[in-house]
Image (cartoon, rainbow, N blue to C red; front, side, top):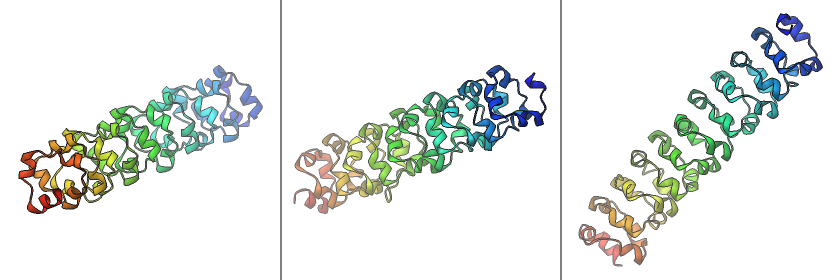
Length: 288
């Protein structure tokens, strides 16, 4: 009876003996004994033995034991068991182990676990894993974590994920991340998030592709400081529909250099009301 073995006897088992245990036998090991297993013993466990662990047993695994698991063993962890990991245990997972997880396993991560992933661990989230995250999980990423996403990870975010990003998460996005977004992703930022984008740091790096992805509803929440922060490259992304939707106050925030960079198609998008509200300098730039 495996359950009757003392901790000293369990630790004395050879790797061959450990590997020979059935999942039922291994599942019978008491939690105190399980926590005493060496990493050498742990690394010979097969996926059936790993999958047979109860959530109670999983809860006592040490960080050293968890970090010693091979990628094959990690993939053998049941989703319910992974969800039972404490934040400390989650913190023990290596980048390689995280990258080996299946999308089903990652969905099992609790929001508290998501929030404690380090920058090193985040690097293990492949595009496939990011794509598999739920909107609740994405919303759980901290301001700092979002800022550490690679462009590949940013592009993997679904439109529903983009829409749940908070204002703090949106404002941490850097120029490289913003440039990686597709127009479809851009169109799904909440107006609250768009309104908080910083004119001094983020708007100057908006590509024409990013700008063209903004909806008229999103554009409507931009203030004059944000409008003035557009570069000539960014302003070239505005469509005639977008231009026509701008308020006269927003038009007043346009830099003359931006107006001067517009092409004839864009210029045709200005309404008579917008043109009549322009300053002399803006009109000169418009009809140069």
